[in-house]
Amino acid sequence: MTTSPPHWDEEADVIVVGYGFAGATAAMTAHDLGAKVLLIEKAPEAHKGGNSRVSANIVFWPNDIDKAKAYFRAMAGPYMDDITDEMLDVWAREMMANKAWLEGLGMVPVELPYVEFPEFAGSDCVHVLLNGEGPVGGERLWRLIESSVDARRIDTLYETPVVGLVRDGSEILGVTADRLGKRIAIRARRGVVLTCGGFENAPVMVRNYVAGLPTVYPVGTPYNTGDGIRMGIEVGADLWHMNNVSGPILSFKAPDIPVAQWLNLPHGKSYVFVGADGGRFTMEGEPCSVGDAHGKVRRHGQWQQQILPLPIHMIFDEAYRKSGHIGKAGADWDVSHGNRYDWSDDNLREVAKGWIKTADTLPGLAGLIGIPADVLEETVARFNADANEGYDPDWGRKANTLAPIETGPFYAMELTPAFVNTQGGPRRDAHARIVGVDGEPIGRLFSAGELGSIYSFLYQGGGNIAECFAFGRVAGRNVAHSPDTDGSAPA
Image 1: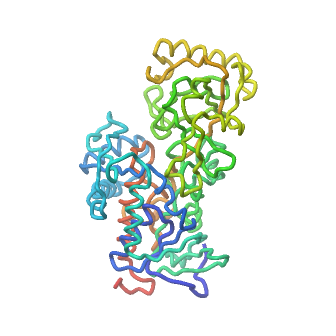
Image 2: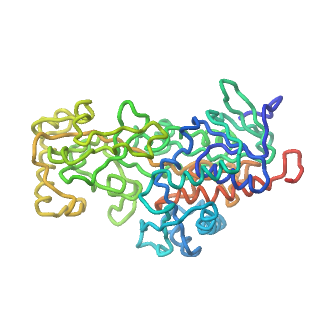
């Protein structure tokens, strides 16, 4: 944070920090209301889009406001204390408005059956939308939003990390940023909107805010390093939902690739995940590698955060090794962030790289990865017996996913926890204003998206993207209607 600088290098009515779905929506909304908008992104132009671009590109859309609020309350459970009725009303109304707004941009909504908590009140309102027919991902929704920004010719700076907010008393006047090796100050006549994502790639923040994860990697953008959280703290913002994350999922982190890779599990059956003691600890499988709900698991009748007994290894046999590539091979949505790796179909290239360890016997394999040989043998023997019966009494894997691990040689691949995204950040109110520790809004400072998300516990797939659009519009409208810093009304 700095006080008002001696001069401004540039100025605009509205500055939006971060170009993903939230930033694009805020920028378009403010622009359409007559504001001169400057969109600032720290990534190179080729890598723009953040987690939005490399996400599943699906949108949670509730078709009933009251049912949506009931569903949200059920997902939040005991974590509703800091979410006001006004905030929840705005969330539900704007989420419902998403479909018509996206159709106005040219989206062809196609419904995907994906209700994560059908037992919850209000779940019959849940719809998840894709942009046209086809599989999830592939930047299909991103391309629509990107083209909508391009059509408006909104000024955009790339490779320009914002490093601080400029504050005068109780109001934000602009930002400081690094541009082409020079520190510049940019005035925002009406306000600043922070849409710069979470802290998946900020190891110290992860250790401080998320229990039990000394090492974790992003599966999305490597550019989410907690910038908005740091800037918010500097100007006195209150924080919320910092320990709530989407994940951790189990993935693989290659030494020479900046982010973690999704696993490709369903092609084979003869595998298990084991923890540091050599025992199984969860149901292996999709959607998030450990059969969970975005990192939450149901244990003893209660939803709770998945605990990962690191280090974790995937143990499999020769039959599984031959059955297909374990890492995602050539995923289109990884291209923009340098995470494209064409995993070999037979996994032998990865064995040769040392990413996958191999031994003729299970005890030999246990010695290579440092876990008790007797426990690993016992774990595999129990799994094999259950697989032959077509029943997993320990963790509930379905019969059609089970096969005994019995064909040598045997293999082990170390897995790493990874985040889809974090949810915490500066607390926002129903007007998308960032709120200070004193409970009052910080003047001319707004936010949307993953940075300071409303989600406090459980999470419905597509909900973060939908929130980007919902609160992106709220932030864009309110910042555009703010008076100029000289006190004059918007034109």
